[in-house]
Length: 289
Image 1: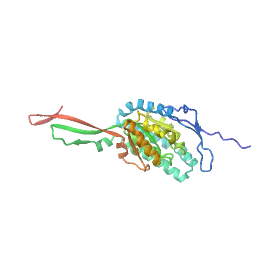
Image 2: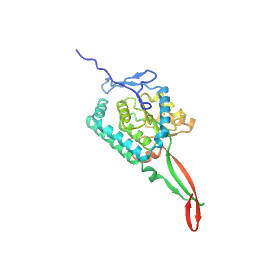
Image 3: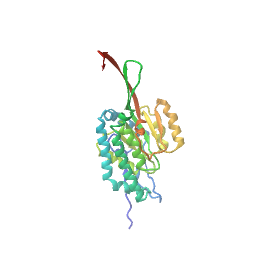
Image 4: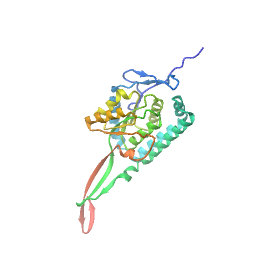
């Protein structure tokens, strides 16, 4: 007698917890042979709003963390992902990848997390500046995190694209709400489990599963999302987000190349803060007060 397979139900990740979607809706992505992969939450607008509330609550504490501590925590994500390497490989293979490609993707994801962990305490030194001014002042420009960032992850990858869009955001002190790939979502929820066990404060990363069609406009129009990173690869959706984002003048970044790493992806989600310090000349010496 053939045994009926019990499909795993993957939950969403909001505020450091794993709730089911408030709508009670699910969808079942299929593998290349048309076989069901799992039961995935079909996230609603209410789920998105809940995730934004959690991200906003977490932003203050995360952005104020010592940068070396953010680096330690990001590195811990890499350590925990490495420890579950076989599970990620199995999920990638289940979603249609070959074993060789899956191994390379998991290794690349671990290495990319380590890369951004290393930049946490360096990007401000590299990109900040002392500006020339005509008055008796020192003028400094430095970077501060933007706030809550909405991320729509690449649709054609399950893991590496997700890591490549999340890590620059949180390495720079932002919190985020992420919509995972609709048809390749398994690694996203497993990554949420890794993040949950990696000292990342609840709410810094929130991961939803569902459809771009239902939620993309909500990412753009939500008044408490400060910026949107769109890597979904659909030109029409990208244009919709760019138009709708005008409602609260949020910045939109459309990434067409997601399998890359560089510190400018951190800088995209930073605000420039400029400070003036007056100079006092006393007995031929210069002092700042």
